[in-house]
Image 1 (cartoon, rainbow over the protein chains, first blue to last red):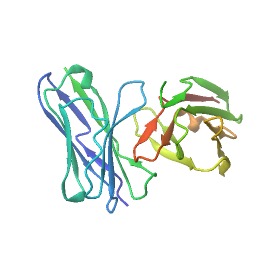
Image 2 (image 1 turned 120 degrees about the vertical axis):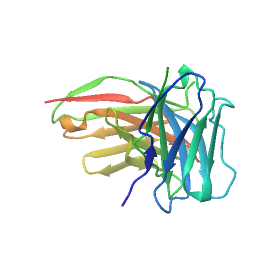
Image 3 (image 1 turned 45 degrees about the vertical axis):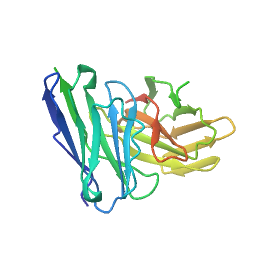
Image 4 (image 1 turned 60 degrees about the vertical axis):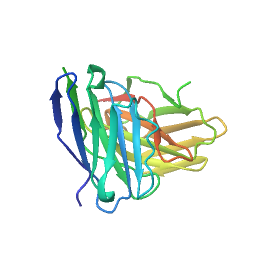
Length: 112
Length: 110
């Protein structure tokens, strides 16, 4: 079946611009996660959605970052007023169980 | 202290040898432990998870967990060049997000 999909696959933007990254989870998966991976680094947790519960936003690095999940399915991660240090690969994962997460291909963001 | 620590490597082993990847974690309340493989430029893919002390085997892979020592490892038997990748250790506490280590880069030399 279809896996987690993300769009765009690559995004180049200018400092100060806003960007939106999209994630389509695996159908039926109630949990959705956003991570960030900088070059040569591990995955940094950003935000977690579970069903209709309030999201766990504890990993968001600043108030420039926000995320929504509409209808319990598609999620959008928005970064406002992008900075060069926001350049990274943004990974989305979904899961049906509490633990087993399946990752999408990621969006490579470059802020010039 | 980081939540999850791994030796960044690189770790090089000859083809056919056993590769041993190690990970320590800081929170004794951690409940679930995962190994992900990440090829260069690709997203992580789950290899194994383990909950209980001891060994868990799946094909050429064995995960080992020692909660008293806060230590989890991954053994890869009969290493193949296709196993060359970065291996990420991840830990789940009572909350629902995973804490990832920075990964160990493994190179299997033909």
